[in-house]
Length: 189
Ligand SMILES: C[S@@+](CC[C@H](N)C(=O)[O-])C[C@H]1O[C@@H](n2cnc3c(N)ncnc32)[C@H](O)[C@@H]1O
Image (cartoon, rainbow, N blue to C red; front, side, top):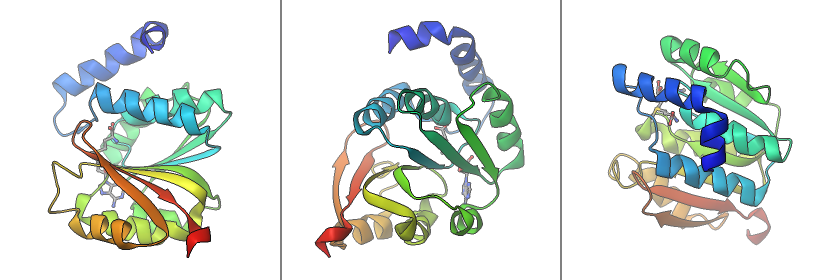
């Protein structure tokens, strides 16, 4: 991974500068980014979906991992300023498609089935995203939700849903702000 940091020095420098100078980008930390990257490599997904692009920092890491398995990344952002920053930051990433708008409106119109999903948008809405996503998931899809420790109470209905639902196997990881990692197992129902 340090090779990647060297290869993309310019890009990482820009993300760092933006993180330090612009408020409310809410980027994941580097440890979480590296975990996402490794997990993506491990499962070699074809179709990756991210909910909550911000300026594209986590999208950039997902895109680097996706390249290794010829995968594509769809990422959704509702805030126009952050969306425009992400467009610029990711302009050289051929495997990324950015969507501007509310995830709740965009997800139903996505025509793919996903095998890797990263949820990092409005915490109170995680429950809505997963309900909309279920029929867009491939068997054994991996869903990672951020902030399940830092915003435990706000995401509690998501955690209850995913932990009590026989369609998912799920566990919490103490990485960054807390990640819930869930695997979709439709054959068990
Ligand atoms: C925590 S930030 C994402 C950070 C990004 N994943 C990263 O690590 O670089 C959450 C983003 O989700 C966006 N967001 C919140 N609710 C949303 C929704 N319903 N649909 C789409 N985007 C949403 C916010 O505008 C914000 O930019």
